[in-house]
Amino acid sequence: MDALLLRSLQGYVRDTFGQPVWLAICRRATLKNDTFEPMLRYDPGMADRVAENAAQELGRSVDTIWEDMGTYMVTSPGHEGVRRLLRFGGPSFVDFLHSLEEAPGRARLAMPGLELPEVSLTETAPDHFSVECASRIKGVQRVLVGMLTAMADDYGALCLIEAEGRDRIAVQVLDRAHASGRRFDLSRPERRE
Amino acid sequence: MMHDMSGQEIRLGIEALSRFMPMHLLLDAEDRVLSVGPTLQRVLDGIPTLGARFEDLFEVRAPGGAGKMSDVLDRAANRFRLAPRHKRNVTLRGLGQRLGPDGPVLLNLTFGIDLIAAVREFSLTDADFAATDLAMELLYLAEANAAVTHELRGLNLRLEGARLQAEEEALTDPLTGLRNRRAADLVLERLCAARAPFGLMHLDLDFFKAVNDTLGHAAGDFVLETVGRILREQIRAEDCAARIGGDEFVIILPGRTEAQTLQTIAARIITRVSHAMEFEGKPCQVSGSIGIVRSTDLRAPDAAQIMAASDRALYAAKHAGRAQAVLMSGDTPA
Image (cartoon, rainbow over all chains, first blue to last red; front, side, top):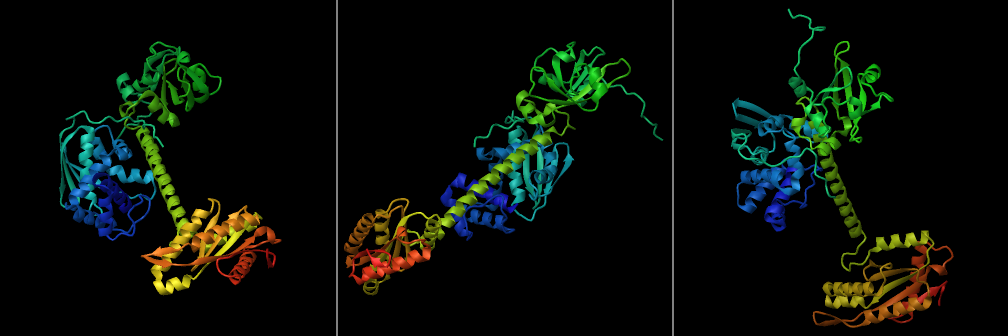
């Protein structure tokens, strides 16, 4: 999990602030290398440590950085695959929310050994949800907030999404069909290699 | 206590049937279409289906030779394969049941492994599949799999790039940018193993120690870098120039065994090396001695023999006075 977050953080910082900023973060974090591979393993805690250095380098809170990165993972054209896989969660944003509990199982099916954090969803009242995500990585909750916000947009749902405590997210769906949302074709666009 | 319902009949309206089985087909006793599920209707793509004959719409792929639905049910009611006549590349798998004697026949169809192609072909959406259908999971998995494979291919390419770079660094002398001793040994071994003809020059700088001692290591390094540049300029792409020791260089020239050519190249190198260099305003005067050997002068050359012969040639060159090149064929200068 650290590897996926680190790779995404690297992509987010490079695309948003440029390579020199990323290199400065790597130096500040006294890393041996300046690229992360999503399929390799890194020391547990490395993702949080690099994010904290990014926060210092960029002069923003670490929470903001993780949230922006979550949004970036869904909205950046280079990560269209992530958005598509998430959209397979269901035809509406609420269906998608319910599919979050299946995410770790889906990830294991796609790649044995890939451990996503366990998520549990409680419908506290009609259109009020509480998402619980326990992870040893502090950033996970905020990344999820960013991703949920971007996905609500993608589906065209109007929502209030807020982090609560360390590992809960409150989601209130105000309007399920606020906007038309982005188009999603089940068949994958041809990949140009 | 619950009643045993097996053997009982339930009524199911066509609308409910379409919801549970969006790919169903209901035929009358004459094989004429009574009802088509909405997704199957999309596959049949605008073709008027109600009242159409089954045979005109579908080709039975298995069981072989069957055309009539009664044949199909008699032989393979639990698993048969059909293809729409207007889209033979999409195969549908099905299950069928006659509802009562001389009653209608209910078929339920699925895309099987052609699902991905069918989704693209007919622009299907998740509304086209029953919620119980695993189609979404299959599509998800195919896409996740493609993403993982893509990522792995990228990783492989990056690792290969890193490996090549590491290999390059392991064979390069960082000061001069020439190859190092290990690289020269590898080239030499390869040429000897292939019994390919080649010439080899062994260059040793004269007066290098004096430059180092009087002007310091930085000046010495400057001289070595300059010699590196000279050698790179004097050789072809297929040649190998290496620094194999402090101020010792080897140049391997595949295919070059003519004495005259080798002598010319060596003379050019010596001239260039002997040309006064200037380091921070101070002249550094060195020159070079070169021993030349040819693989064709040894009967079955191996790397050690070649190097020993080049040492002897170099020694002879030094002995003949500085700034000389000597070609040894056999044990005597040629």
